[in-house]
Image (spheres, helix red, strand yellow):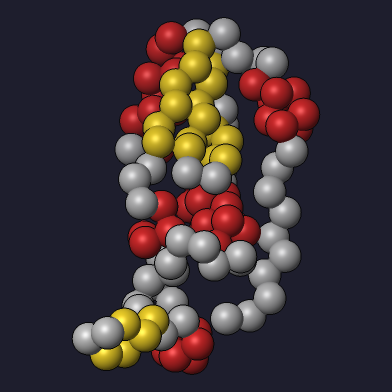
Length: 110
């Protein structure tokens, strides 16, 4: 797996962005890293040896040190252009100044 130093937003940055909101929602994503497929070369490096034999993975596994950066980059690319949305690790933070705007942002995200 390639080195992937993608920056994770700081808490101060997130709080500064959320300061514009009056209404908030949070979506937690289950088993986040398992949503991302990996390349064959990376799958070879991440092969797990068990008593039943070798298990070649095809998804990013928890504990891989580049996984947070990979997933942060993926979510930011996926959600770019939607105002009032901030991905942070396995959560999508959504904020707006009105309840109607929040519902519009939620629909776009979903």
